Length: 97
Image 1 (tube, rainbow, N blue to C red):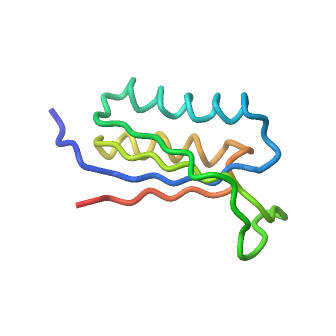
Image 2 (cartoon, rainbow, N blue to C red):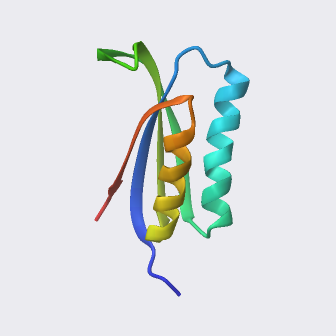
C-alpha cells in the first residue's frame, strides 16, 4: 500500500459558469479523489474574487480549495484532467507537512 500524503489543491474557475456547472466540476474532481482512494477530503468554495491581473482575458474567478490525503499518482491524474478542462483557468497543488 502506498503512503498517503496531505495535499491542498486550489483551482480557479471561470466566473461565467452557472451554479449547476460549478457543482458538476467540483463533484467530478471529488469523484476522482474518492475513486482513487483519497481520504479526509474537504472541499471549500472560496468564492468569486477579482484577479490582480487578467488570466486568459478573465478578470474574476471562483476559487475552490480541496484538502485531502492521497498518493502522488492521484495528483498527476487530477492535474492532467484540470489542464484540459476549459472552465479551469489555473490550478496549484501543494504538499502539506
